[in-house]
Each structure stands twice: as C-alpha cells, then as structure tokens.
Image (cartoon, rainbow, N blue to C red; front, side, top):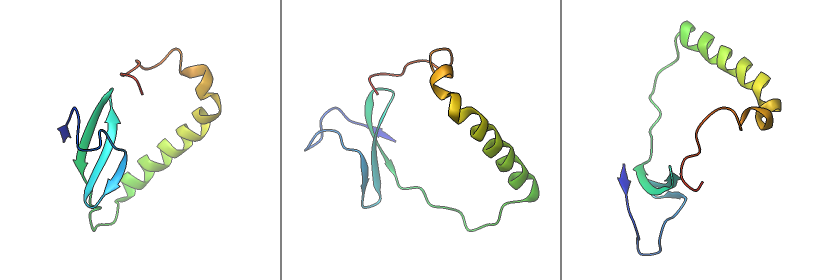
Length: 77
C-alpha cells in the first residue's frame, strides 16, 4: 500500500487498471487490485460467514444508534 500527498490529479477513488485508490484514515492511499483465490470455502468458513451475515442483518437497521458509541472517528472521511 502506498500513500501520497499530491498525485498528478490529486487523490482518487476507484479502480484504474490494476491499482485501487481510496481514502483511508484521512489519507489518500493506493493499493494493488486484489485477486480472488481459486478455491472453495470449507464448511467451517461457510458457517462463520453465515454467522456474520446474521449479525450484520441484525445490526444494520440500528446502525444510527450504534455509531455514536462504537468506533473512533478516523480522519476526515
């Protein structure tokens, strides 16, 4: 991951070729494009993913209530 102050056009967001630009903790960063591995998930991985899906489904409707109390503000996002 690379950070930069001012590129040719300043910070960017999104994908350009195999580079992804984003803002992370208030800084402009560039990363290489991730490649998905060519494998199938194990039964335990699928079970864990289902647990997270259930939790996110429960928490999503009350995210406005939770945000002031959990997490730290990170830069000017």
